[in-house]
Image (cartoon, rainbow, N blue to C red; front, side, top):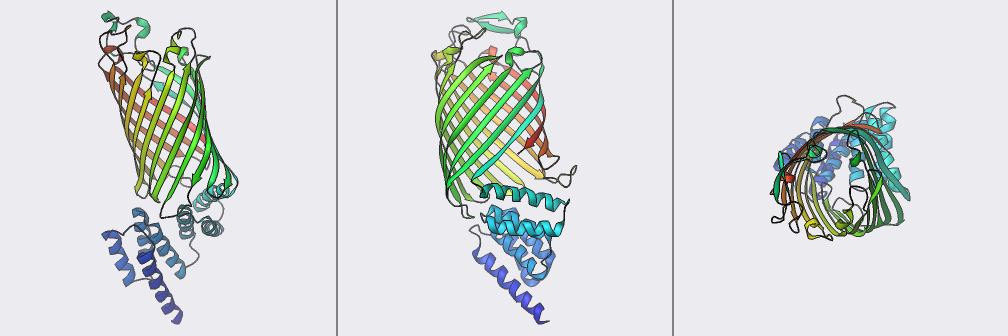
Length: 439
């Protein structure tokens, strides 16, 4: 009886201290309602678990930690509770505490359980973060179908030197399938506490079935120091100046060479939201070859600005709003372009009902609105009209993990461009399926 009374007193004190001091984010009325129920029955494990998950849903991780640790006062052998505490401490920036809870969760759950699989995943992340060298990346291979890969116009007649002419058969819309390979490698080398050298290497290659002239390869490297504040629940910020080197080939010939500089900023005011911004200056040069003898006329400086806001407003539910601007100079005014994008993405993570012991599935619908304005009329198309495009992109991404390293991905997208010049009124439907291996 004395032990029971002591447990109840300790639980009440822990819950009061957690809810009063732990979180900078005020609890909602719904969370406060569950808290009152817990106070009336502090030894009720179901109520404590409900309170913890209500706090997680709202992003009050410190309150959730207090509730879950209170459960361990009553029963210490709960692998699910230990796993969730490990994940929460990982997100709160306490790797040593997270490691202790995750190791204990593994020991109790045993090999082969979903808890052990998830614990190993987070332990792997912690191990990499603790190492001076941090490697992370993926390789993705798949097939893409497009109804209009060459972006042929929808009209039967197009403009040529300002005159309306029948569209040549070579430019008529024709669907195609291509295979592609995409790989990204991220490496960090910790120089000191809060300072690392961060490098990202991106490779993309594609080969078409019918349209060989669209075969494209790209290699891009960004590298530079990253300066980060300590990771805490109250927030984190970082900035990274970086160098950009990029090269691409089209139809087996060198197409583009780019060098540039950039600056990234990230601000996380709490564990649920993040602001990201990037500025890049690029010196872009094109090579003339075959049917692209005037490609070098596109040479010129390019300025890029990206702004993104991410918020996990509910556990497993994330929204991302993005703004993108690209200002491209060229040797000919009609090839200069100002592009502006507005994007909205919503990501939902839900239980993996096909592979129940693996990570959760992710469903991401998105919408992109794009505007393009060119610098002057193109004398070869419409000498008296400067091109201006408006474009919609509607898409859906789906990720299905099938093992700790492998995942199946499916992508669908519909795009439609409305231009003031008929040559650029285009529509395209895309379906893509691929297999990805993470490392």
